[in-house]
Length: 116
Image 1 (cartoon, rainbow, N blue to C red):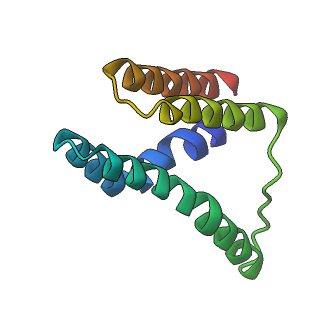
Image 2 (cartoon, rainbow, N blue to C red):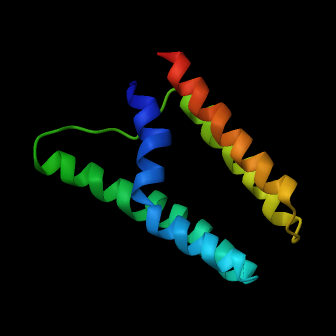
Image 3 (tube, rainbow, N blue to C red):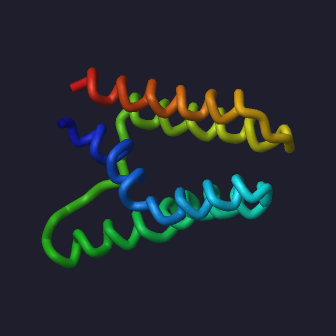
């Protein structure tokens, strides 16, 4: 398995399993605003807090880490944000939106697995 596949696909699924479960339960109960805030809040928390803390921790233990992504990783992140924004800005929920997001995630996973 490549580092990109682990970092962009496997770790987010495993690391946010509780948030994913909560978002699924809340959406099943019809509380879409809460489900959406849990899902998006979790990813924002990881991006703004956990990743910078891990970089500082890496410096402290002598394992240098960098937030310098290549062109491919940056493009994947940018397209993921655009797709999520398009789905969220609509303000309505439909099964095709979920299908679009799952399909995008599968395409990202396949691209990282085939890339290296």
